[in-house]
Length: 386
Image 1 (cartoon, rainbow, N blue to C red):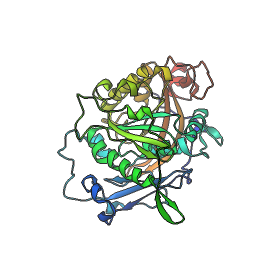
Image 2: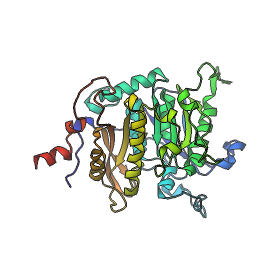
Image 3: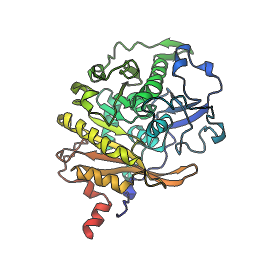
Image 4: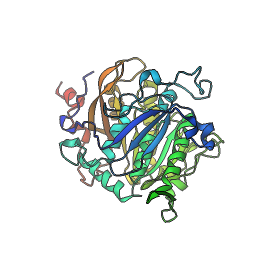
């Protein structure tokens, strides 16, 4: 199998204007009483967008991996959780993919930077890849983009895109919606409802910015909804809105989300969640369903992928790209960087854009009738030369 090589012009270094960090939670009492049942992690990961003065906070089970730079606050490895047992060990659906969802990984930062930071150098120039410039412009206008995040973990990326101006449905397995995404959305929603005016806190009135229909219509189906898995109320975050819901890739989408939602999606995002070989085909089948339902909106799928030393259970990038192209979709690397992961060395982390084959009008309006994947310096071109 010929190795994939990303376009050199699409390399992006870490943008210090996106301020991140993490802290050890020494005082559980800092969480409000109604948060007690949702408190399942000793670490708070925080992120502040370039265009926002408000900081988003996320409760995590473990420290981030390869996300932070030396100048940012980081939890030492010896300070991480060492309790007697994992609180979700015996919970249904708590597999390896759910366990890793309770911490933050490098692709989340790459995705947030490329989507929200104006000084991103992706594509070799100030505004970066034309697609990303278009998305940034749409985000800045607020309420223009309906985004579905799959495999969201604790909800960092979806929350950031909402704060930047999108309407975001943040989804994952039930255990992550109940104990990760939901609690973090509630906390950040409460914080977003308070503003500082002349040094005093004042509640903001969001009635002038009603929740979008895209999120109002979203609910778990009557056949799958329970107290633990039913979607939660939408919350206002920054310029946009966010809501959580369960979406299991091993189950039909139609049994989990209504057609009124899946037919109104502009962008699908997935960060750091395609690493196990067994997850690849179910995820792509889920994406295919969304592509079909939202075909009138010409949706795009963006995902991050990090190379790893371990093989076997972990899928290789070239195998994954081959599976995508077998479905007749085009795939393009729009950004990438090197990340250093503790105890695992330096690896490349990529952000890809996937477009259904029948789509010829690009989201950035260029209307180029070409196979975008063939424009990359990828293993596909090298195979043709063989």
